Image 1 (cartoon, rainbow, N blue to C red):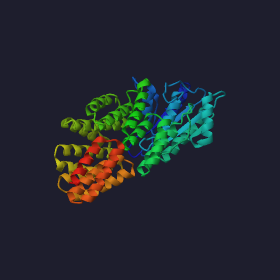
Image 2 (image 1 turned 120 degrees about the vertical axis):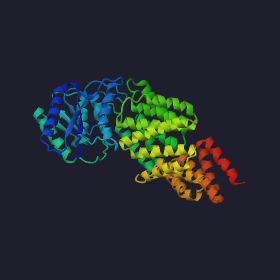
Image 3 (image 1 turned 30 degrees about the vertical axis):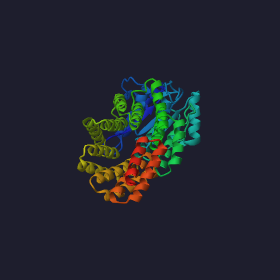
Image 4 (image 1 turned 45 degrees about the vertical axis):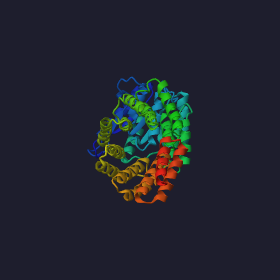
Length: 476
């Protein structure tokens, strides 16, 4: 490979295939030995790479899968042992297989392909037979029957060569396959993905239906995605109830608490409390959420930075500016380390808001415009709308209200497109302020009235009070 790093192949097997694991390792080493200096190489990864952990052991294995490019699963006679899975998986190997299948459909995960080998046996477990039949009917290209060790060597070697020949950017794929529990987790993940995309495309009602169904079928990731949609729609109480469902899962399932997913759920609740005005409560909860992050993998880094964002905003709201700056700058440093371009822009927006609060409008404008420049290459999002609104607020305070109207117009349009009612109400209010300063009182009244109506629909008393105050000034 051009960067010299091997592609990682996770090998999932029940306990009766220890010898076959050794064979797979040998096949991978032999493949690498035949390659030239610039050719694609592979590295075998498995449960052996996981160190001791206080969590459910399978959770640590699943995180390891999240760093791999391929998964090879082998089945023969035994289905495997019960992993204590809250998802209903009946063997650790099944959970590993479906973890990889889910990640095939996630663009931000490296998983590119899965290969399942069914080794010949006179009386395989019934779960193996059902899985093989299901794959035969729906995904025959992803599995092969294997007669013996020689056949395994031949077919896996061919699979490695095929993977090496097409090594390049990942193309996300979504696989319809049911685990032994019958719970359609892959469908839940697909509904979540489609729901989020429909919202981005300006169809929030359709997207919301998908996200709601995903939350019913799936688990914490789907529940948090639906809660985020509800929060943007202004339904904070229902969002809190959905987040609590995710938290309940982590609270009752042994070994799942000290994970990035659990930290994300607890942080989501803290962030919602912050939006309801309970900033002190949010600070304590966010600090506790950080203690759940024991890893330093890419997903853990993303979650850690999100928590630092929320923590900084809460500190800022209670006037602890130095603490807010430390949180924002720490998140920015981590995002720059891993090259998270969108995350960097989020940090810049946070720092810009902090500078506004500290009356350093020059620095605030610089951060806001840097964020807008960075977001220009990405599709419209709530973050882009926030950055547009922020720049408008800065220009308004600098006495450049007329220049800010383009920013408010774009922010209103984006928020409407993605169904971000809360963001739309804020951008309408800022637009009304800029229009008032520019002398267009009739349009300012129209925008302020729209902002008031949206805040009334959401039950946002603070937003209502701000809109009413502005309308009183406009009608004097």
